[in-house]
Image 1: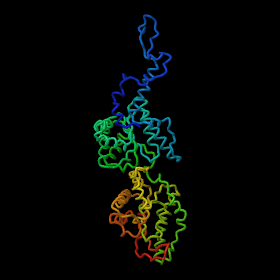
Image 2: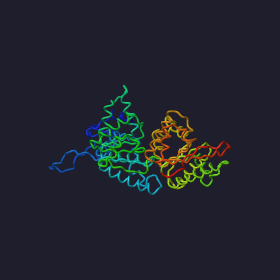
Image 3: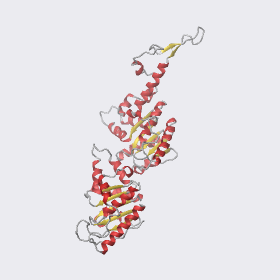
Image 4: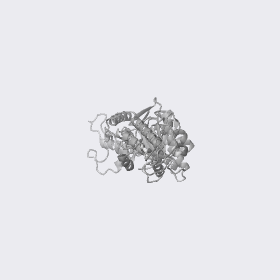
Length: 460
């Protein structure tokens, strides 16, 4: 695909509409039209004395070639490249999902997209999970606009920001101002993957300037959102939530645990860690230990029946916390509910790995999936390497889910006193958090029993 800078250098809106431009297709035509024999013009067949006698008219082959060349110029301007194949004709009317509700959403989205492409006005915002078809719908709108002769520019937000940064280079053939103005004022702008960009102050500022300008002028704009709207800058959120200009088409729950495939480790754990196999007698636990195990299992079953608020398990390693957390995950997944289960050290490793050029997912996408999961289960909090970066990421996840009241289960290696004050303070808030402290020793060994106690889980 050509870079946007190359397109801008070669094309302008003026040349897009220049009907006097020489047709490259005409010059390269190898076969002559049988009607005009390649001349492109025909003499009017009219009797002498008729006003049309002797006048030249354009052959139909010329009109067809002119239309095809104009579409080709518009396609070059659009930056669609290979995405010209994504049209309403190639769209599966049911979408990619086998679920009836998802298919219904997609049919309604396709109808709204088709109507918008007929007469682009206002803004159209597509939200939904990865793979729901947002890009296809957005590209189909752009392609239909081109067929109708309307210039439309398509670009993904991460690529747009890269092009803008590159325009500052001394070797750039296009200035930053030229590129920025082209995007701000293009007749129809299609932005894909908004939210997938690196969230730097500079990136937020540039996006806001572009969208605010188009918002004020009410220029037709189509946006495919990657991730949750809540993850965007507040100023962008305000523009995208304006019902007078923006029509939002929701293709399903935003990127979340619904699109996480349980890993093999969790699958294996669920085979033998269930409520039925949980032994409340512990490892030779005394009466206090057995009571804490019974209360913890009761709390876990209560939560698994209807997840609400937070449930936090504390206790020494091996006392049964992970077993109960896995049992909750198994219960919810068995009901078809999206559930994300993550071992905290592995989660931090996965977040670090997204910075690799070989990563198939961006850091922002992965981080957003964890933050906004319908049900998040974090196992072994406190077992990770306590670096400033790790503590910051965990704190951001916990604070977001705490403020949004999203159902969350956390197992703590040890007790709350072993965590940082910033994290521990959230886990001590009894208005949202139910604490299930287990005072039994390791099931796998004959270690000393734990002695600390805490309140049992109660539904907030």
